[in-house]
Length: 107
Image 1 (tube, rainbow, N blue to C red):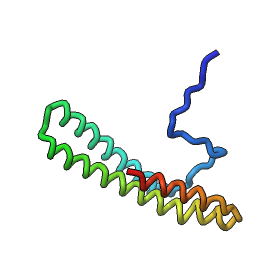
Image 2 (spheres, rainbow, N blue to C red):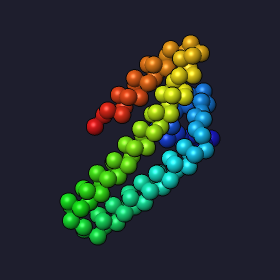
Image 3 (cartoon, helix red, strand yellow):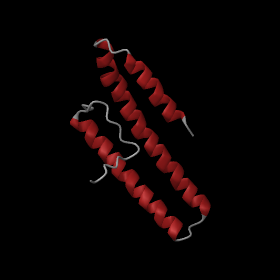
């Protein structure tokens, strides 16, 4: 019998899905592709013993790019998912949102 191994960040919330417009999906995908390239570049910098300050600068730029993706997703979540669920009387979405914000604020 084989075991099912789940990724630690994957959550099954009754198969809920986001419904982003195609333009938003494209924008997010493009941003994430750039971030992926930045991370590969940083890894290469570490492997080539590039000066620490230069690597830190690139890490800060990558973090800023990730924060931008988070802002786009959070805005869509609030204006779409949260609004719709509140209109349907699902007030537990507020507790879910508070947990999400707490996770975003961890450092």
